[in-house]
Length: 281
Ligand code: GLU
Image (tube, rainbow, N blue to C red; front, side, top):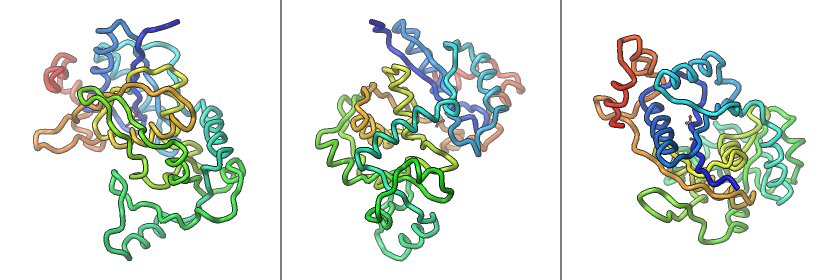
């Protein structure tokens, strides 16, 4: 049995990599090297409306410039929609999915009309469940229709998973998962037939990932990932959510800040050693 630990860096090719990505990638790579483990690159290009092959090529270039090496072949999520469809099908067979044709503006309006409307950890208003009790339709059929989303029935899903769902977090030990904080999340729609959440748990399991090392901005989403892992009977990796790299003003780096893209820094004469020094690795 292969007991090597498996780390992965999983960028979305919808912009150039910046110092924040460099932190995740280098930390993943260094940790894999330190324990004699494996390091994988995964291209998270399920959002085909935003992903660009040009950005994907740049990811390869920038990571190679940083001195990283990864295993071939690289998994590109857009080539594996069947794997995510199978997972959705399974949740559907368990009666956990429903079709929702509410528009984002309907939800925003409902939320604005009531004080103290609950919001998810990313700040979006929770879905009020308008479509939850409508007659059920098969997931496969729903995904053939534009403008309709497949949502997870969180109450049913959380009840099925039961109490005591948790994950192991570096530096913290066991963390209690709180998937209900996300409400009835969208897991698929016609134009994006798998959400990030479903694709990430399926891929981490299929690739045998043992250690998920990524930014703190995904800490809260881990509750949802643990719930999906539990429902789909997938193994739970260990997690390490690192601090985000901040810019000089203490603000979070963003892909839209082209000035701190790794390739812009490279053009200004930065070396990979300068990058490591700037991010403290
Ligand atoms: N694709 C995600 C991103 O670029 C990261 C996913 C993950 O590491 O779980 O933000």
